[in-house]
Image 1: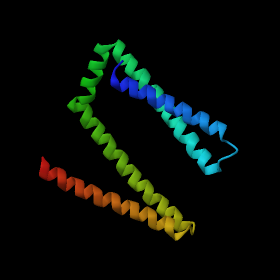
Image 2: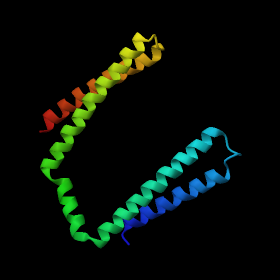
Image 3: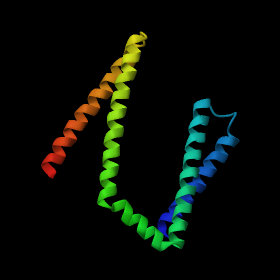
Length: 138
């Protein structure tokens, strides 16, 4: 078994153990602690199991794994992913501003409006800084 597969199996087992602990301590712990344990255990169990099964598939089908790795590193696919991420960022940026406007129009709390405007501004500044960084680098 490869090292990645062993780590994934260990992660899945740890997640299951955390879930069992959460079930055992359900009435004893506060609700927030219960929620954290259930969420953490579920995430670790699911992520570990999926990574373990993917690792086993790659071990049994090395040709397919090699082809998937080549496809993931292909320049065209990288460009497609970058454009998709940029589009998603832009859509999310304007959705955040939409939430700010809805908060203003419905007389929502001031902190919600300011948080949304701050997130919009932070994303715009980060976008500008990264554009300058990549402009110098390329």
